[in-house]
Length: 353
Image (tube, rainbow, N blue to C red; front, side, top):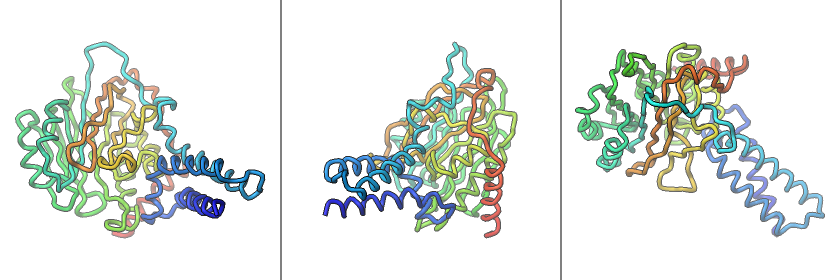
């Protein structure tokens, strides 16, 4: 009986590991990219059960143990870059004052959440230069406007469909636009931020829809939006930042492809996962809120902030404009096959329009 139960558990672990290898965009396959950490934990627990309950002299037992070990190692390979033993992709700023910094706070507010006071308190305490809110509707806009005296520059797109977006900035914004890159009711925001020195930073704020049975049955809408922006910023020689709730985990094939095509860096690599969702369930958390940047920046700090009633934690990142130090920072590199795959994903979504 223990062998039969453990064999079934091993089969489930194997299927959960193999299915994401498919290039299928079906939601129930792509969503298996998310719980790799949880799958590793389950795999280790399964190995302990196998060691305690099974007779290792039997050939069949050796087979299922070997399969379990392979699954655990494969799943761990994906999340390894977001653990501290892994080398940092972005250098920590090690210079002396003065520093030219840009501090950005990103928060998915959860449209139905009414604890705006807690978020406003966090913003007042941490004093970001720019903050972006996702899922912010007309009610949230009224609450956030209380900060306009300190954040005179803004881009606003209040919506009632869970995809409203607002950007507030202490720094001057230029050429600001709200665009609907893939879906007619899903906005993204694009602007140029002017640092105190006059240096200009291209910024993109995104919140694509997730693959799920209640929204999109496939991931093509999300994937296409990320890759359209990736191709826009690829090869640019000026400072660039992309941030927001991407409804994708840091280690997924799509996010990795975004990083390869865009050439942008992830400051979490070698520092931790900084899981932002789900704020209420510690055992079901993934890094869904992201910030990527060009080699013009090094990192001052990155931190996950306290919960404020949303299902997401806010995340705060301070970057230092330090082009001389950052020039030799190395991210993921795109191959010819990566370029082809990106074009195919964009074309697939364009063909549906």
